[in-house]
Length: 179
Image (cartoon, rainbow, N blue to C red; front, side, top):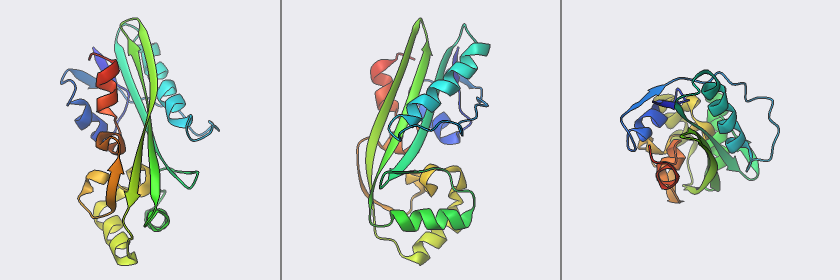
């Protein structure tokens, strides 16, 4: 059985593109102690999540993922509250960022850990647009305080995987693992 080691509703929906046969078991890993360069962080966090679940289910396949937003060399995680979400979106307005997803698969006698990068170019946003988005979409559970799938005019264009920006790089996973 394939286990998705994530409670993210977006990852659940994206994984359905690759397989319908999986269960969700959320990893309770504390990611706060890792102090790594941004480019290494999501892969290490996905590996920690995958191993935590695989330890309890050694005969199953485990897929874990972690996604971060990097703006001007700084990691933007999930905002603590609406004011922090507003501030994050102000900082991203009119700029290019990189969304990094690290994913780890353990199963069938193999382990794969990879990182996928997508460039995201934000539109110039007004304070009114930012506040309306935050209050209507409640993006507190999203890295960088936004969801590309939310239907707002936040993003001008991307270079890379749309699914990666949503939180699970399905195209890259499909290239490397048969689920």
